Length: 320
Image (cartoon, rainbow, N blue to C red; front, side, top):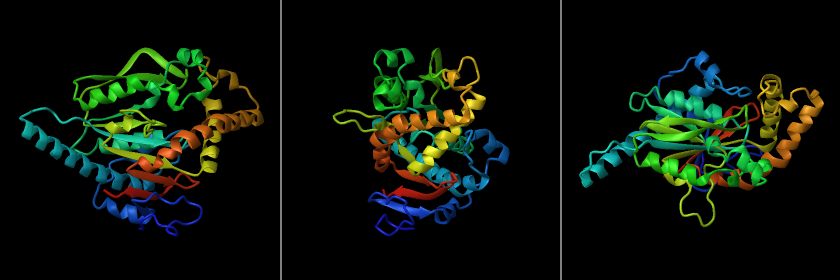
């Protein structure tokens, strides 16, 4: 374990921002203590993404210590909320504990969020854990087309930030029911009339590309509502390879469906499909990563750094 100073990190791994404590895999795994493994291999298989290789060992070494830390944080937040309510003479239920998860396209955020949700929900202190993705807060395709933003999808300007902030505010205000819009990856659009309704959950995991974005001059940003935040990190070359691999897999299992937005890519020869995927990565996703996503890494409470095999090799924990 080290303190983010030059020479602490092996190879070409980035230096942690000042204020982080750096753990290698073994040191972090030791913090699991006696936290029980509550997921089976079958559970993990059902939760992982189509080209993410999260393993039982990964859950034991990385997720269980993280779930222990978060359990302690949730309990502390509740005690603080109860103390304030006692001071004010209130008897309100504590608001949900909100965890933001950020990172690039194809880095494995969805798998991280789903596995973390499943583990946290097995703690008796907070069984109601909801997962919400920021995809639902993208402007509908019609609006993006009207504004010429289809090739900026996933960039900050492609989201309905007012609606996103209103959702997070309602959660923290303890409203009995809060609804989030629903997104279809198959149709590449918001599903009209559908909503994910949250009814006072214990924990909400809020996952998306730009959840740690801090817009210049903005009075309120999404991360203002977070109690904890995680940035999932990897090298650009690794993420590019994972993105292309995922695109080629989707070309086989999703694009052939008639209602897929990317149906026109379904019959491309392998070399052409790879070239299309590489072009999308270079022109859109890499640009978004460099301009908007990666610069927010230093704002996370915890950074999980992956190697080329999708294994989390380092954990950076911000000092309190």
